[in-house]
Length: 307
Image 1 (tube, helix red, strand yellow):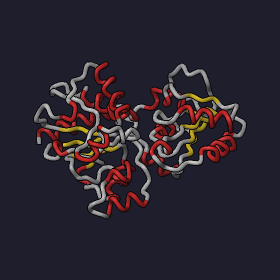
Image 2 (spheres, one colour; image 1 turned 120 degrees about the vertical axis):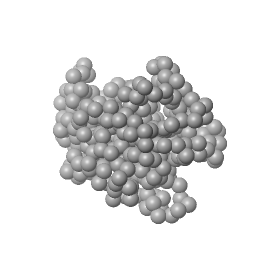
Image 3 (cartoon, helix red, strand yellow; image 1 turned 135 degrees about the horizontal axis):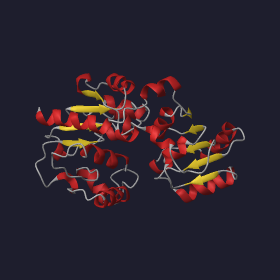
């Protein structure tokens, strides 16, 4: 949904063009795996695709599943980990979705072994396809990060990104709690990454230092299991599986998260953020608060279409 809503916002500044939307897709074996229901932990899973389709239909946006209906002048996407075959000959603008994952061993394999697919390293390899004409990124810090990884500097435009360019708006909300420690959990276990949830909960209790602890569950997480664990190891905590995470962050005194784009909101609002990144690094990566990202990205799209 983060990708879908960002694409929708950008399209709103491109009213002179026709535009169609599709849930993310692939070709070959990955398409077969998706059709068989084996990729439900990814954005090619049927559950997440259906969420995107519901949103697109609700907003009366034109659908073109897999982008086959027209010979498009431009493709705008939030990920280049996979570039479908029918897009490889098209002009493309890549838009950074949010936080990028750490550079693990898988990142170095994907970066240095020619036959290794980029997607095995997750969003750490964002931008490395070089299949696009322009790459719109969140901040100067991210520009430097992507250049270090090998992205062509001439292709990068620092525009900020639509869902994170005006975090101050979340300060005006009706979430009834204030001055608590907020934990935004991850879907690590759903994506086959090890996490010792009990150990982490006990650590969060110590960090909260007698302040109210609130857990906001990741939307892709097994909520029933997570709630049971939190009830067992932190019984006085509050747990939310629904609600606006950004508003919860705005009312908190401290944010605890992992490699999640939610940390951008906390950083932009000058919260105490614990996420495994040095505070200065986090500040440098935080999206520009220009309240203009969608418009600026639309201008980049026009430049690419016009050549």
